[in-house]
Image (cartoon, rainbow, N blue to C red; front, side):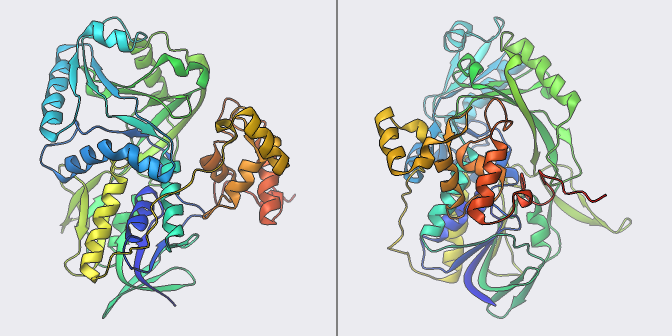
Length: 494
């Protein structure tokens, strides 16, 4: 049996930041993640926006966290050596209902302490975003909004946690939790972990983890959304994060100029009964394209390079229905962050259904959970905590002379594997040997950007597989795209 002070269940961006913040205390901490890599669930598929704080109700914990996060996000990313683009956002409308909502958000934002908020008229909007439709009526400008690469942020937090002593256990699905006199025993298929405290950051399955120790009080009812990605050739069309506030609620639109120069467009809202299938809906994508043609009529949709689906966790309080024998959701969803401190089970924290602005507030939520756990367990601050990370070497960040010197020292950096993103074999090899490192093609993609360009891996996938196989000393046909069930090479027997 492994002995720890704290176990964090779930290796998404929230679990990664919770672990990093726990490392600020003298606590022996482990992260248990059921997949082969981190940030493979909700963290990998979202709008990647850092929100300013004008969308949340004044006086709530969510608002406090969001505003503080937005105002300190650049320093956080600098500390973790993560790329961040503080491009600002403009919420636009074309009618009176939308304008009413913008004025409400302005009022909320000012009450929350958001800095630099102001309303724009039509001419001011088009001066900032000339590609928008001519009939825009009003805009709400928030200069402290921005965009980040979600998995780059989460992985950097995880690596910093590991550097400060946290253990990350991959391929470790929690099957059972037992309460004991001085804490808990958390079981996976073949291993038991003892801990004085547990922090449940299991994303879409956080409700199920909590129900391993007590009766349901909150459950997650997912919905899904569709996104479209445009190639960097279209990147100059949008300079700010653009939110379209429609007259009809189902026609919302968001455009994001990403850190890597693409435009991300989203998102639709679809019903979903499944928590782990990231599929797209053709009809929803066509609807999204229709709205785009109205709001940004000249946006060159010929540069679409991919679409993807996202799953969102909607938490509801539930009650037991004696007639059906089932727990059923109450009418309204929980709109604040749902952080449950179990009364029956001391030192067991659950963060359930954390969605927008969960990415923005990941560090704040992790800090909150870590501080609460440290208080409950009684411990000292770790004066040896090292907060800073060094960015992985990226060929695109170097001058020609710096590249030449690097290649002279290590020829792998002179072999370009991903032509679309200009990513070398050296960068891919480095991503495999990081802690934790890539073990799948998409794991390499999340760490380097390889296969995320215009050809979407048509050219580089085979070479990435060969490098993964060689560096891990496994066969090429055992290399997956993104975990179990995503075989690239099929070995069929006839």
